[in-house]
Length: 219
Ligand code: SF4
Image (cartoon, rainbow, N blue to C red; front, side, top):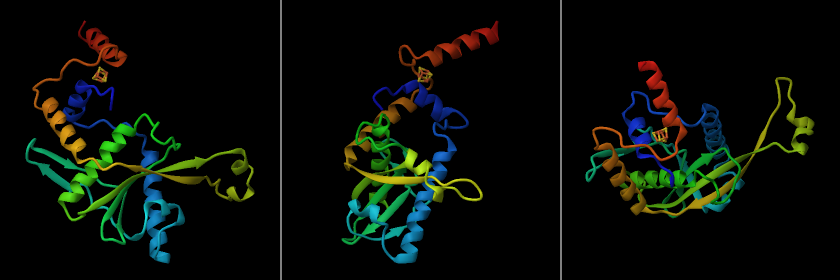
């Protein structure tokens, strides 16, 4: 991220419980999207129409748990691991890795895009070193909630238990960039090798607020 704070990264990686920045509801929706796609494949033997921009998909592969989808980077001794939302085996034998994002589609204007780009490239980096070689495509699948007046006035969206909300899928391809992951691994190692956190970024009010709390607590 352009405004990354090395101090925050050091603290997050050394705290007992890593920080969670996303509310759990988004993970639930992303997981639901994955189950919808896999269920469609299982029933009809083909992907849903809205995945057509990804190219010719032969089938899906169940994303491995992060304990299995992991590689140790020898140069930095960092164990890089994660769990992609979706892996597709393409007709040409290569793989496409996707990640669902429940958010409005903004092409490359999403403030979090640099983080998503690193995330998907990390999956490609791991996949290429395990059994997903070659990874030919990376993509974000944005699922936008359909919340306009027409949807709200649609009687079929009301059920005896509550109401339904649809999602519109939009696909954004992300460039494969192995150098990005190597560079980030080196940066991460240089921050984590330090015995104590560096200074925070200038002007961050949260660190100043924490310092004043600690002063009060020790008074
Ligand atoms: S300066 Fe801000 S971003 Fe950095 S460690 Fe402090 S609270 Fe976190």
